[in-house]
Length: 246
Figure 1 (tube, rainbow, N blue to C red):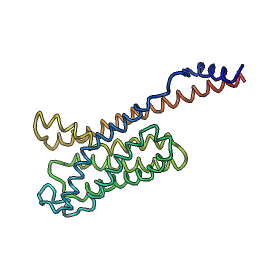
Figure 2: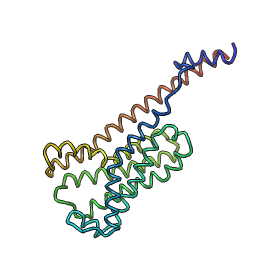
Figure 3: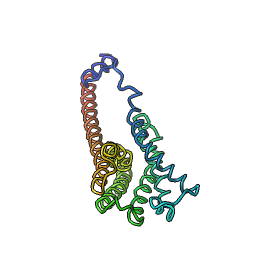
Figure 4: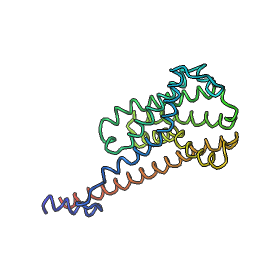
């Protein structure tokens, strides 16, 4: 049997069609584009806050803490913006197969860590508005710590060559970091319908943003693992067919 015949039979055994494209390039950019769009609101809000701080805007009870200690919030805004944009591009399959993914990851991970640690610092040392309450204080500590820990676990995993674990934990870290984007959509319907939420509902709506993101992240991780398993099995069957025909 010729080599081309064996290749066609192998593809048939593995369940792939030689005439069907593996995937559509445009579809690869749907997830990164959606994530960047979801990031635009918190990035724009952060840019406004930086402009306010650097241009000497009016000090009010709502922003006095930022003027009193501007470094943590500036670090948080810049680090979070970098993490959200470059992190979104890490989900593009075409870029994951290139060195760009590795090189940009050396920026994404430190930026994410700076974002999480600065958020923890602000939670602990800023005088927060009364509407934040104790429940939100605890949630910010939990999710900020979880984000930082996830990045550390991901870093340790990739250092030992465990790509799957690295990918899973960076996905979880990104989900937490993107919480501010999703929280816009948890707050908007409530605010439009019922007005500003009280302390309890404020915490619920904030927590919902993080929980929704983490639920989606787990779904993505599970689908990625299932797809990897199917690919491994297909490759194994194709290799066995080639061995029998050679």
